[in-house]
View 1 (cartoon, helix red, strand yellow):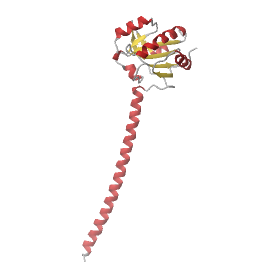
View 2: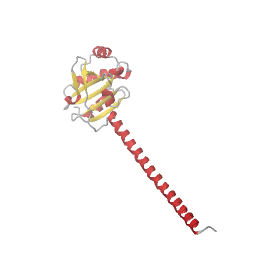
View 3: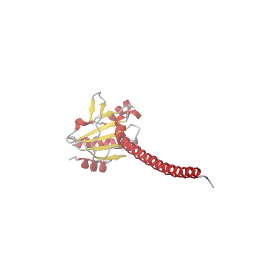
View 4: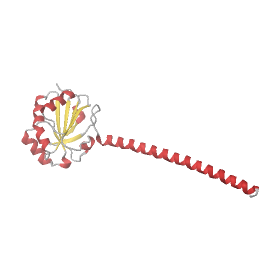
Length: 196
């Protein structure tokens, strides 16, 4: 039979072991909670980064941009406030872009009083000289601007062409279309944006 001191030591060891197991369990719960919190924070940060990278949403203000026109002037989107603005991202090598451009030109003439069309050439993946020649050949009279670094494209979250954003006179995005916008669709989107 163990002596009283040995029994006492065994009891202390058993209590210490039990407390250690409980402590490790609590520590693990705390670490799991921190990992969950970090994962939630990371997901929130990813969502904010995605929004910052440019998921332009209908019902939200359209991000401003300033780009150069073919004649070397500066075009700033926010300066068009008060009109409906149609911002179309396009490239010369994009067949649907070429298909929709004559309709945009015709609508820009028909709605000259209250709608401004802006063709944003994705020059970072296109050729400026070819874009100018293409617009001249089609008789495009609305502003063509050049996104040399792809910043406007990134801001608007444009990952495919064409992409068109319809902005109301208040500067809020009223509609967006990924893919070609032809006659009937164009009329619908213009009305949504507030065109007369």
